[in-house]
Image (cartoon, rainbow, N blue to C red; front, side, top):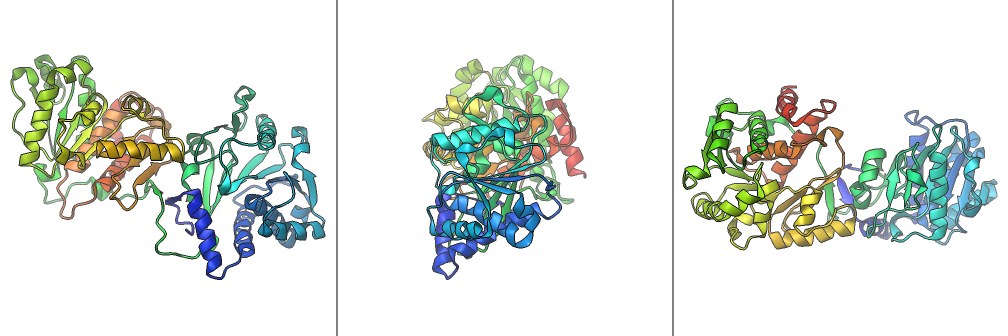
Amino acid sequence: MNGNNLDLYLYEDSRRADSISIEKGFTAVQLMGQAALSSYLRLTSGAFILSKGSVFIFCGAGNNGGDGLALAYMAAGHNPDLFRRIKIYRTGRSKTDTAVFYEKHLEVLGAAFFEASNFDSSEAGAEDLLIEALLGTGQKAPLSELVVSILNNIREVRSREDHPAYISLDVPAGIAENGLVRFVPPGQSHGHKPEYFSAPDEIHSYGDFKLAVRLHPDLAAYSRHFSFPIGFYPDSKFISAARLLDEDFSRGYFLKSPVSHKYLAGHGLIVGGSRGMEGACLLGADCFFAAGGGILHAFVPAEKSREMITIKKNSLMATSFESGAISDISPAAIAIGNGLSEDDLKKYRSDILNFLKNLTLRRPEMYVILDAGGLELIQDESYPDALRVRTVITPHSGEWKKLGGKPVDCVDSLFAAAALQEKFGCCVLIKDAVSALICPASEKRRFLVQSRPVASLATAGSGDCLTGILLAVLSRKREESIPMSKAIEAALFLHSSSASQAVQPSADDFAGLIKKFLGG
């Protein structure tokens, strides 16, 4: 737990890391001081523009408030001019021994203390700095009236066109693991609704990132996140609850080998493309080939759809359900649902399930992707049990709700989603501003979080494009196999990284963006 920037921890994990370090001989005062020093160095490094205005530090009575007090203490020892500009607004006197240590020293040094309830938003201007250290990892919903009042005052200051910078230490107040409050960017107030607070410009996480913070969609969109090592004892048995999407994937996951052929590059099958929805099938096909897939078949409901798709995409070998039974091809991966209507799924449901059952016997190592119109198949008792562990479903938040889930925006809701994943027995990728991949409990790290919202993905058909990429990476034959979760992670990375190259692209642009990114 020392700032590796990928692992995500529960609040109790952070508290346990603190306890373990103290058991090994470190002192709580030392750890708090190192946390505060990391924030002090960030603020005075030159990367952060620290103005000559006042610095308002809002401190709770616990150890998070102690972080704020320790930060003021660092200023007293290293930057007397900065210390003289600090105003400490506390909710009450410190209640933990560690926070009391810094509080007493600050009182001796002549720090300016005020009651937090007396803070007036008119006191702070654009040249000032606001630092919030109210609650930390011990917080639970709902917030107290005093904390809500402080956060509303901060929001009032930040809603102005000319507003001060704002930082939260370790965990922003309001981010409980069992509930959700909303945040707005600076310059907005959201009609002064009491449940909306101002998103910090920066969040300084001590040790490693907190899962609850990186799951929050507003903080992912509006705040910069920093993880500072503070000297926690490196316990090798300490495994994080989740992990951030790795942003350093090799293009080699997708590029073809010089000695490869089309079947080794990836043999895929798309089941979808109902009348009037053929475009979804074509988008998936375009991105399958752009991501390095080798050969692609399609099963479509109507003969007219087959004719249209074949004309549009000569490299796609399409067969219609109307022409007879589904053929006996044996792809390495199958995507079901791209443009598959509810009526067609109902009509051909048994055909599809029988095909999967028979194919499982011929090719037990194959993968299945269920998206859009194919998602409800995972709830069917006839879905092959042996195939579930090699299946990934990819619902967006609305589709996830139809499957019985709830939005994944806090830790408790993520664990609730995991319970539903266990029922389905497959990997679950819930697509949203912050996407979450939930793997079977047998995985070392069960949860993967993509906490980097990409505005370019908010366009019709982007999900079909992701399905095409998934189909390509899962169908690829490799000398060394990779875990299914790693392949899904690689697909997410390529999807978001490619879309980020353009401003407001349409889904039709994605295949070209994928090729551009892989060729870069």
